[in-house]
Length: 301
Image (cartoon, rainbow, N blue to C red; front, side, top):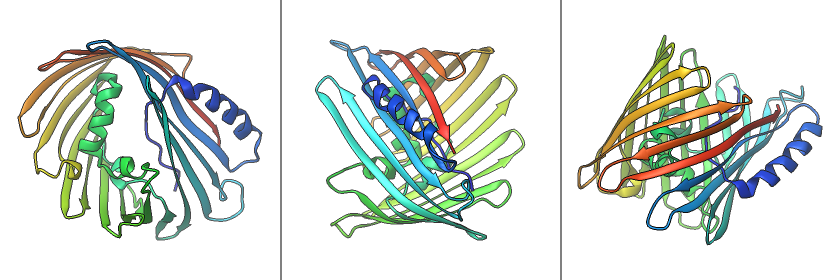
């Protein structure tokens, strides 16, 4: 089973680290890899703010090197704001069998890997919030260095159906965290969803995505466990590839205890295959504009 990657935003303070790591990864024998994205954002507000976050996925896949069915994965996440840089990490070991993949250590959250989440027209601020609303909160919890999430996870991909489940706990607390997610792809459509249970609070999400030539559409509904209120959120999003390198996106997100509604729109231009630059606007009670530039990278494997 190939490694599962996510599109996560990153910031300029990590570009140097990524470049150094890329050279090291490229020099390693087959089986070692490093994936990630570097991205810097400017979000409007009372004073405006430059910010970002970074993630680098490092690992060793023994099967790719002809050495067995096991592997090691490690993720580094860093938030960068005017006040400084905060970083966290996660590491785990996996073993692939005919029945699926078993992971032990600090595994990723299943919802984050299987549930299709909105792009929010490229807004990094909204992607961070939306990832918790529709993609679960386990991934964010697992990067709390003071109380990391540890446990086990199981994944399987029979045909067009894929699913994963995990049992974890906050180290030192003994509080169990249960999570499960699945995705089913049929032609142009992907149906995905998942559930999380954290200290008695239950969260769930369900999304339907359709891809058609130059168009894609997404409908999502979620009730995140992190908020513990049972409030429902929803999102409807449409993206159009206006040109080979230009994607236009528009959508609306709403819900919560106050039933707020916020329309959004944006444009993203890609260059040199891995580069990206975009603008987005989020409406609602306070209009927020965001500009960003970033770069995807992938080495080894």
